[in-house]
Length: 309
Image 1 (cartoon, helix red, strand yellow):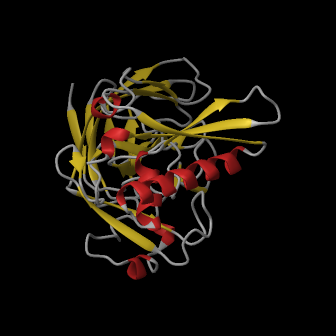
Image 2 (cartoon, one colour):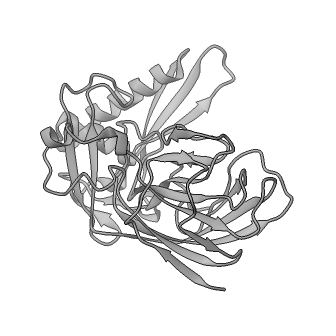
């Protein structure tokens, strides 16, 4: 089987089935995609929060692709084995005045730059965070004609932000157009379940996929086979701090969980409010603990003890 590569000299910021494939591969081939960060290369390690506030938001979510798979037709499945990620030594996370779970938490744009060293970062005072790279976006071109923003995910995959799309996982997606039109981007060096401040650790990165085709097997939506190790082994070796909140509105319960975790981080290691909120976005895992006690939903946020130096 052949190996292919795509650079990031051409990226797309929309889904559009009319885009011509940049390369056509055979089922069973591997391909390495070089991906810009989510800003499509606008953010750089020396950028300030004020400068960040002036970036072009129309360029958010840079996709590398499309990759056509020979013989792929509607009604087939694409099997995407994720083999490897390689980051480039840095990432960013921002706070936005009107976006994210805690709308209005900050009054102006705030930007944090992470230095990535191997499989960890020590770029937040008093904390050592493990990296778990994954693509926020892996998807196939949509069945609909026209141009669509990348923010909403769907049956085609897309901006799912599922942090378990790490190396060793396999993603299955339904094919909607001839050739499938595989694209990937929005690569994250780490993210907590919820991505509460609007970003994970947004990073330029490369990913290697092995792509196979399952013929004549319709699939309703994305399906993932992921290794049983769903959290960092270093995190699993120590306790977790679990913040529990219940409310008729699940989003309100999530907000209270995050605010309590922010207060804990501020009190524990003296982070600023902005730093604590960003830390929650990249490491706090929000889980639905129960839905049966109508009308209340219970949300639990898990913060690993192992992050504290």
